[in-house]
Length: 167
Image (cartoon, rainbow, N blue to C red; front, side):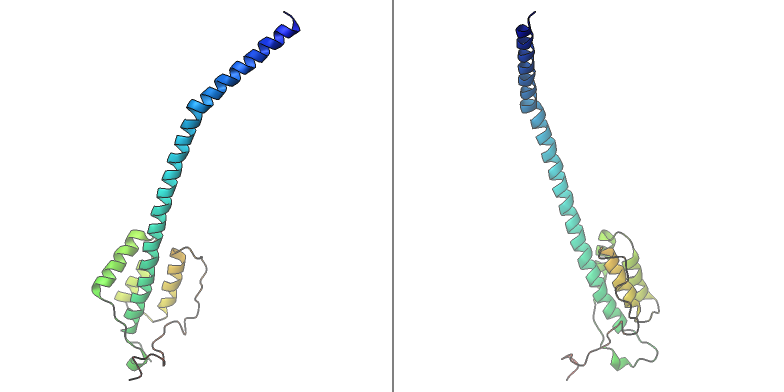
């Protein structure tokens, strides 16, 4: 066999292999890969949507927990604090139940609901709101550090500019 014949055989073999490869890739492998990628992308978007919805429920529940905590703390009596120094807040039983259910359904750990229950059912000082605020920040993934550290001025009993108090 001459060199030219060898080159022709090699050239034809490479061309044939390239054609077969191209056909396999174009009509079998690429569609399969594209289908798998689309399925993966669809699952990823669905998971992302679920996580976003869960986070929104968690955020709403955590903020509601803070509002309920303010109402609960504002209706307690504390040593060395006159009753008229705190404007009582309001929260309904239904609001509290809904908040507990949303916290239980969406939070990763129980710290927020545990502190809220402690506020509702135990004797606490108003500075416990600092613990709840930091637990909410942690649960929402803002950071692990304590942001609010001022326990002395942690709870706002009332403000002089409140129009409800200037009657």
